[in-house]
Length: 207
Image (tube, one colour):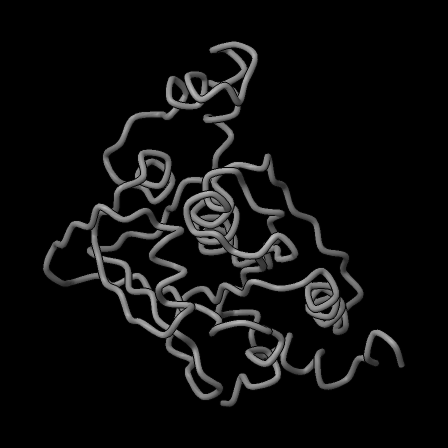
């Protein structure tokens, strides 16, 4: 099955496939999850079991503490209570895994659990419209401007099987430097077929 009409929405680099591997050797990297995603976007395949971000460690379901004190110390929230409320609302990956593999997606690659795309708002609009094409359902999503790549667009779609959108977050924009004009859209594998059909059928933005 070709996913060309999805992959061609990205202007720079490749969409990234995320695959949760059940059996494999443990491996640790000091790089942050959002940085590793950008490596895959540029064409590399990366496999790891632990990465270097404390928030990412919590969100990706490893044995990591709630990052409330980290959030408060960063100045993002007015009080420790507010930071704890924000941290407690983070999505946390429910899929078991031994390691995570990140790789660039080409038009014929379909063996992944979640696809991440970095899109302009115009291209993201097309994707949302393609999602709604089949049954008219509007897209609903939540974001707090935190844990955008690991939480909003990896853990959340893997847990729910729903299309997810994130406006980005301070940490991922700072460390992985995706474009100021880009937001992140994540497609779980169960929605790929419907979105492909929707993209083939809907009119273009300026048609």
